[in-house]
Amino acid sequence: MATMSKDASFTETFLTEAAALIRALDPADIERVATGLAEVRDRGGRLFILGVGGSAGHASHAVNDFRKLCGFEAYTPTDNVSELTARVNDEGWDTTFKEWLRGSRLSQLDALLVFSVGGGDRERGVSANLVAAIELAQEVGAAVFGIVGRDGGFTRLSANASVLIPPLYSERVTPHTEGLCAVVWHLLVSHPVLQRNPTKWESMGKVPSR
Image 1 (cartoon, rainbow, N blue to C red):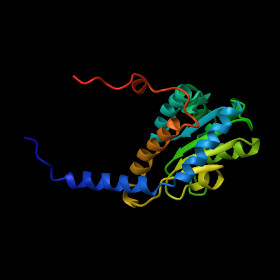
Image 2 (cartoon, rainbow, N blue to C red; image 1 turned 45 degrees about the vertical axis):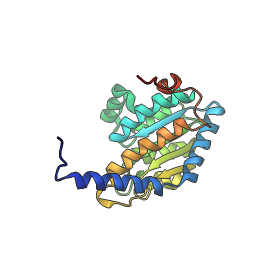
Image 3 (cartoon, one colour; image 1 turned 120 degrees about the vertical axis):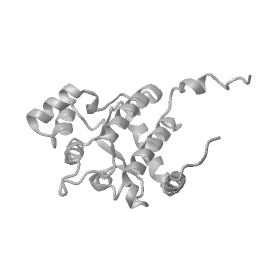
């Protein structure tokens, strides 16, 4: 018979915190991001999803879902490791995303979707590559959206709409922000204004009882 470990209280604490953070999310912010993204797609714009570290993994997964479920032409620079590392090697990290977007002919039809724990802060030397990418978007008139933590950083200040994962638990800002980022973008690709195609298991109907 399985017994509870002495660390079970941490599991309970983490789950309680996650539930509280979900309740603290602003549904209006999520709606603004959803409708803003739908407007970009419906005018024929492309979606470029940016993230660093764990958020780069989210970006790759989200590109798949926005393309497959939402009929959105979507890309992330971190899926092309050859170009990414060449640019880092030859040009430096801070301009990597900016120059990739410039090469992709980012325009006023398009949008950025930024996943970031801090949102970017050039003065503190944190995710300056995200800041440079957002500045390019502003120059060309592309829309900017974000799912961010802490105070939202440069992304929150600059975005047309963004979702803030509030930093209610300072000792676990990163895991909660990255975990709930996935919750929010899965909400977005499931949102009626964005989703066009059914997911596999739901399209198969109810699982028969045995």
